[in-house]
Length: 141
Image (cartoon, rainbow, N blue to C red; front, side):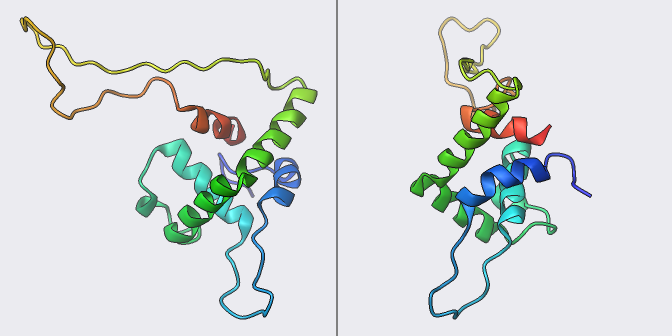
């Protein structure tokens, strides 16, 4: 059974061709972690906002998940997979590709302060996810 927030079988069929991790030609080395489990680990991180090292043990090691995520982003594979999935959802009427995203900033204000001061490092709660998180969040419904 699929856990909440993980890729469905239908979604996996669409993104899997774009995200495969090739084995070494000589067959040596450790077999790569299962790609779907790695993607689900990435989705967990993006959904929760946790640090990579806080990834639960049910996913591959966080170093593997983070490394693969970086490879997917740098190679453009992740973008291609998301476009393919977005196109499928658009065809089904589940995603409007012309949507805009906004982001707000957090500014601390001291009561009685006469001028603006930098916050002490404390952050407010994010009200809007980043565009990258938003692209993944519809996967986790």
